Length: 189
Image (cartoon, rainbow, N blue to C red):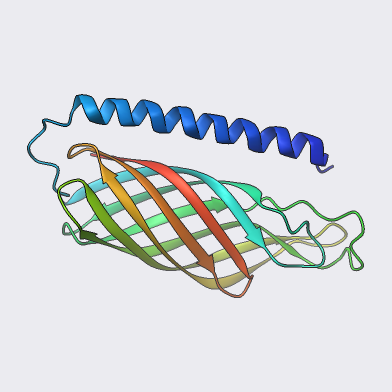
């Protein structure tokens, strides 16, 4: 059973509050480490946690923005180039007035992406990604299925020393007509 619109709004508001708190805390932590001289990206393993909003276009699910939570685990080969395994939740609510309730809707996307980073200065990087993955498509009345599709994205990262960054970005999932805006936290090992 899907949550009501009222519960969905409360969850979105809570997520926005958590994101604001996380951003403020990480910004304060970054300010404490601002004197760290080496904030350049170094090759190695990194992990990401993301939260944002997914917006899609279909007659079968609500056209508003739904909560999207995601993670990524990657390896940076050079300061400019890396690869990442990722998962994004898309969590659309089925419209109670949908004409064809057996039509599938996107639930989550898991894939692999080639990532790039272009330093603007010692604090900011522009980022990009090109990936491919499987989108799980749910049905209200019927069997679930999955579809392979490409994803691409662009964003920016605020470096908080050599081991941490705040990120913001946009991702587009082709074939399922979904856009995702997110903010996140990257931790490098």
